[in-house]
Length: 256
Image (cartoon, rainbow, N blue to C red; front, side, top):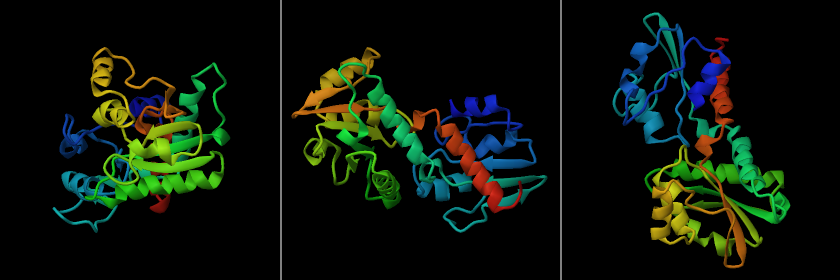
């Protein structure tokens, strides 16, 4: 989706996609790139093992296990620019807020709650194997909280404290909005999180198999209403975040 949007803008000679576990692969994508300047943007939420080691290694930017490598490299007649992941860019704050506003505004009656009447939760996986994942979410919570738009702003995690399932008692507000800080909708956002929020697993599975939303917005539980948004990675504005990463690298290297 984001590649299609960038192609539509006509700013690049090519817009290529590649994947770690699917075709076209990360290791082979550069064989199809013919432009003299190549910008590589990891569509990941945080810095970590994949963005700092796996992807650079597969692209031939570094040796196995090497983390300190040049982010700009010349190879033949090309200059390769390795950008930071989209999830850590400051522009992600606006994307998260857009997601939160959109899911609530879809309700026409009764009156959708205002942000000042709402607790906003940014939900992530959380893992002891990579603390950067947690840091990216906590940073967004700090940035959004500082804006003062929402009555409350909290982080919530699947496998770390504070837990997603505890949001009902964490929030003081009667209205809750939860935005999954995932790069795409999949098992975690479609199935695991709705169950953690209290939906029966069998019902979630039945809805999923029927092609229905696995969470009904808003759902009332424990005296509160919760709106659950699609994952941040599907936000249309993410194409602009990708562009910001490209501009950032271009300006840093004075190659505009």
